[in-house]
Image 1 (spheres, rainbow, N blue to C red):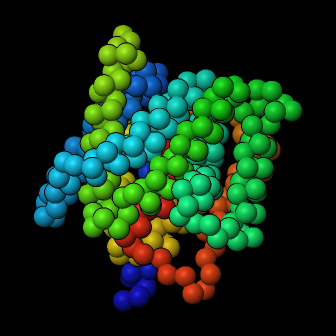
Image 2: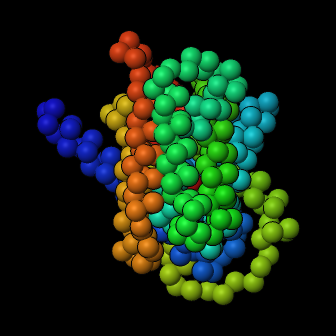
Length: 310
């Protein structure tokens, strides 16, 4: 029995790693037709369309309107609207491989955000070392001594700022939304709904560019929304509930590998030594940050660390 469970756990983990690791490839392809705001709005709406029926079919429902939606709006702004638009904009002139690797450092910025919000003042040596190592990895990827090696400076800045925003969103959710009795899947569906509303407001100002339709871009949107956003959250939820949050968190180490491989194989993106060395340093930094004391107990109701993706 345990072997069967282990196999299913591995299948779920690999599937989620492949889905989330391919996000950056599909963002790049969708950008051939859609502007960043158009792309993110479509992705959010399609993702919510997948998640909402799943929540209600399990007897759940969205939170009642009130202060909780104010927190959801801020979480959606920090965790979806800002970073997803920045990654979509950055990939117009930047590398999807670099985007995936930089995005994998989100847990490092979550630690920083938790410290700023007063959630975690116990900065262990491993946490500090992990954050520093991750930042060094990001600098190596950017390769400021070799201009243009990993894409334009503006694209890398967009990736870094977007990743910082993602980290801040998880810290914010941990402080204001965790422990409110809202199941993780319902929380994800509510956040996608709130983010869709935010992007709808932005559409008249930054989302009315003419579209030049391409089949590959339409396919990319069809994958980004229902699969990479909606289905991925369901799969992540299953990983957390059936295999535990520790297993679920390991997907963070998989998707930068997938994003680099797909960028090179599908898009022909160059992947020089700065990207490889920076990726190793970043993943090592995340592993240090995730190291927990032996007595630590991880709650399955905490915001899913594995959801740290653009």
